[in-house]
Image 1 (cartoon, one colour):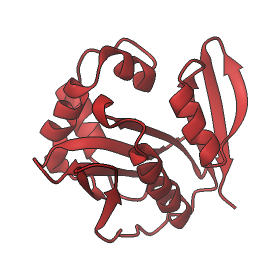
Image 2: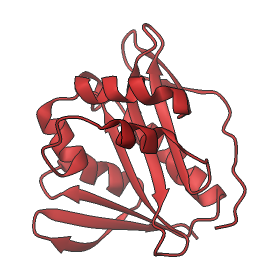
Image 3: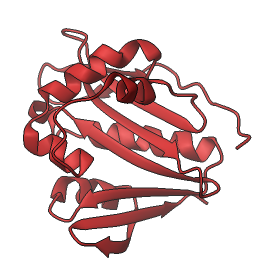
Length: 174
């Protein structure tokens, strides 16, 4: 791939109540913060996000999740300004066997789900992928993950296939 990274401006997400969230791109220094986010997520939320009963991240996985080049792999985090904790992340990763196609995913800590945080981060992720020249985004979720399916529909993703309990969605970025 030969695209130019676009550096996002500092942003924030407005949510109900006294929660104030800042948004920025992931850095290599976020390994511990992403591990803490994963630990705060319920077993069910981890299962919905990773499509399996994942219990922790290895150092190798955390390095992969934080080693973003902002072109082929981009990720945004939402940070609770009250304590500096990462409470959500959304990313795309180039699918290297498919030209200009990337996989997208997002997760939000349980106590802040349903407030629009995932949608806001996913919108930034889609924009970054478009700005970096991607033509197609894919997402896979479990059929019973109604929140993820609703999020994908809000972003204009369309279902493309079903394999057992998993549904695949796609969004053309033309």
